[in-house]
Length: 231
Image (cartoon, rainbow, N blue to C red; front, side, top):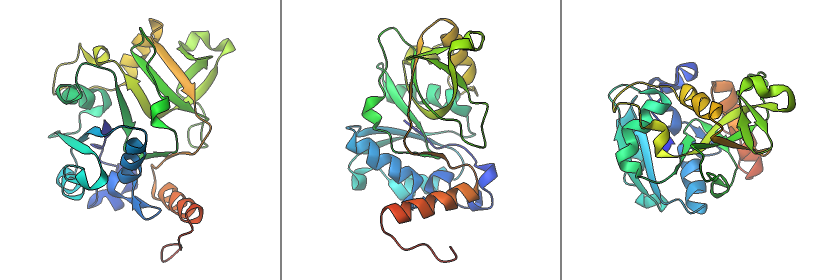
């Protein structure tokens, strides 16, 4: 599942007329980078939620055939937050664990490497803390995410927005309800049922126009493209 329902307030005015996942970096929309990497990792059945300007996402990507995947759409009248959006899409996701990717990040991880361990509710991909989020999100001890009060021997890292989840994590949420993911995760962490892994490769939270422009420059250099006009 690719999460694509956010309004992207910090990206305005760019997101006033374009859904955030359709903003381009390195010559293609952010969400297309995800779709291509997912396909390369063997994920060809995708679910994408949307709210703000969702019709533009559907018009751009259609059923996914052009990109070698199949896309099922999960529209939301108003954005339901991360957990609410996932709960709304569960009928499309099925009864087995599934991968979820934030539509507004860029990451070079091999998506097939993010795997849920038996008995866990979630497996989170964590990254070194960026300059704009130095406090991090979760504490990692070995391959386990631990509660904040166990942090003496753990390292606090930032959640990448990429994880694998058991549908049971969302079982108590009502369809159509707004719900954040963090409270569900912290309950599961307290129960010892969340694993984690650290990724030291490329990861960008494309949360501002400046970060989008920097990612665009980096990708164009990496792939030998000319900078866009004005850079």
